[in-house]
Amino acid sequence: MLQVLSDLQSAAVAGCSELALQLSPRLREDLKRVVFDQECKMTAADVEALHAELMMVASMPNQNHPAFMTATIILLADRLNYGAGEDDLFWNWSAFRDRFREAPSPVRAALMNGFRRADMLGLVALDQRPKGTDLRTYEETDLTRLLKIIARSMTEDMRDAVCTLAPEELRDVHRKALDNCLKSSCILSEFGGWFPSEVVEQVSLDPVHPSYAAATALMILDAIATRDASGKMAARYEEQADDYILLPTDVRVPLMAGLRHLHEMEEDWEPYADWPVEQRLDKAIVMPFAKP
Image (cartoon, rainbow, N blue to C red; front, side):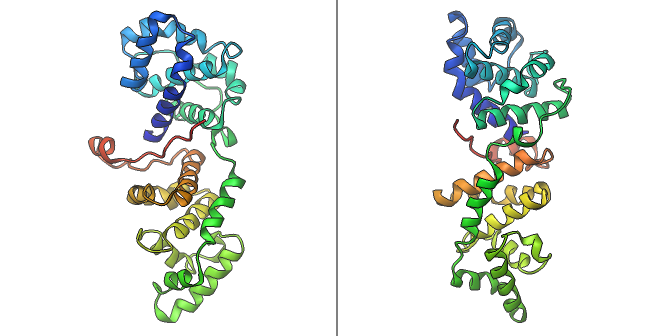
């Protein structure tokens, strides 16, 4: 939920100026306050002032498509924030789902994931939930290609260092399995549940290990391939997000894109779900929004 709301808020911020030009001048400051200060949560007074014009812009994709998207995003974010808006957005979804697909992929994915989560919570009324590529920011083939480049960046010495984490009598077995994995699919599950998964998983929890990024890439690739985002990576994200954002840009960007893909792929992805609300709001880390 945190990630969904963060993405909707980021998309609203990105599109606020364009939307403001489509509203009555007297409402522009109200719009900015709702988006920037209230994180798209409207009060009853905001609904009275803004709702009619937001709904109007959200019904006219041909007039200004970016503003149309931003208006819809604000209306949806208000529902997810349990704001004062009461429209279930059924008509918007039914009439314009195809037009939503025309938006840049980060904006489209933010909106579609918002609709999916809102429908799960009974906050909107959809005849069918968004699914598949509608929910994805990145094309999976391109993303996995980049993750494999990171995984295969392990040098011979780095691979040796990974395998020294195993008992001495098993190191050669792990090393052969790791080599085979990296030169073929880079999918750990295809090589059984132990070799080389055991040592790769250990390295993926050690941010000072030289193969930390490569091991993390392998873990993400396996979660994508097995369609098990929550089981393989949600708890790991809770523990490691602080370290992921400190990685060098050339590996951080693809790895965070991979983690975003897991969030968009699986509706049950919910790191920090067991944290107290105050701790979640203070310490939870959301993935950065991909600029349109």
